[in-house]
Length: 285
Figure (cartoon, rainbow, N blue to C red):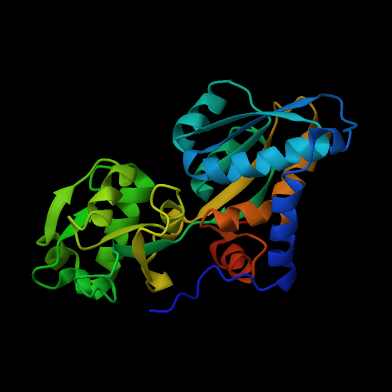
């Protein structure tokens, strides 16, 4: 099935991507001196965004002469830390539910849509079981592996897809292994010990898995939409609000969004991202 989701509608996006990568290799001495009140910024985010944030952070540090202290971990755990009073300046949160919870606690100055996740089917190279769609996961003899006891994004994404497709009971009969971690699950597919699984696209971009599996898109209506949005939040603890604003604007710019596209996400500024913002109500109102 030919993939359609996450397509960037602007030619300039890809051109800027190339420019961003080139800029990342510039000598530190060419970095533009920043004119902010502080010289560092504390940034937290959902761990799934870590690789994209780290790459974008490196460029921001180089361009602005700012040191970024970054933490990537469970979004829920980081949210609880914020509510308990542990400070940060910027927070990349997963789900609107968490963002709204932080707003209700008066911890968020404002937020912007950052990116969206999407789920795909993956099979071993060559697709030996000839998986073409989610429906094929219910066929007798297909060896299915799922993250049954993993955290929300992995476990819920797969469960919702099977339920919406109306094949959960049949597919579960094909389950050959359960996993508690999506990352530990993928090698079974890479090594052809399982015929298929459902994962977030971002996982297929990780260096240890990139190019080692077949990727099959499936209908967007099967996604667990609650798990798709990521927001970037300016937190009330920000020591320098102008710096926090500048950083957030960078991450939401074509230049910053390039790294999230490369990481397997749907950038908020893409045509698809704009559609999801409207449909899922990812707006600070």
